[in-house]
Length: 177
Image (cartoon, rainbow, N blue to C red):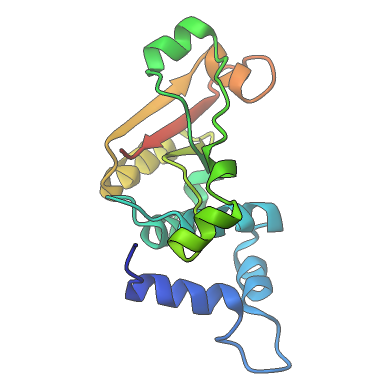
């Protein structure tokens, strides 16, 4: 079972609203209003914080992303099938879905682990359109102890985003083993 770190305790306090006095806005609402992040993105960031494993430190990565919000437009963490970027390019962006997260949220797993498990390993970041900021985002991602960091670009990035390729569209893929 994973050990609750001080970072994780601070995250739990922040997201639960326990750091706010009664009668004030919850920290979720306050946090989102200060940095302009909508609820769906906040939920994804929260799931990332809960997903810490091996070298992936969810609270550290989320804090780093929030401290550098100008470098990205959106991010989401998921679990992908075992496929290289080269294989992805050959498939033209058609990825398989992995439902291990669904398996790990059942009652038996929750009893065994003491909590549900958000079983993900790959962070996808839609970067700012500015090339200099994209370079900064890549450099920032190198501080997160990931096993692989690479760009998905060209028609593949357009396909993965559910549309046609737009010149310059890239997705930063950050994977932890």
